[in-house]
Image (tube, rainbow, N blue to C red; front, top):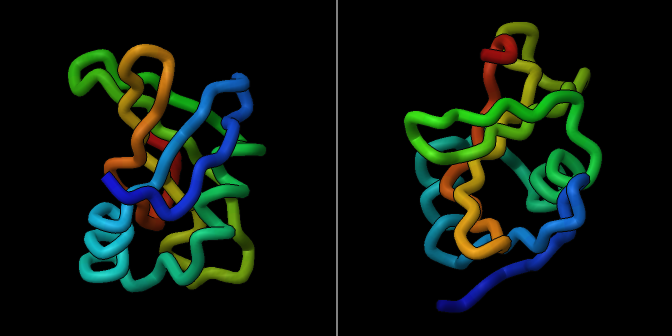
Length: 96
């Protein structure tokens, strides 16, 4: 799998963004404009919510320059064997 970047999250774990997942984000979530927004959200999130049903962690970061409706970048990460893989990223109105 070809990865675009690797970043260490707030908890010290490696997280990867693959080319395929970046294409998905850019195709379906046009408001996510840069990989830097995703990296910043993982390095310094405002909140992390573990979703046990889906077995993922949701990282949230507030960006004030976004539209009034959706300001929190939500990065969805699945962890396997201590390493994380970004599934998707999109802006949300609030933290859920």
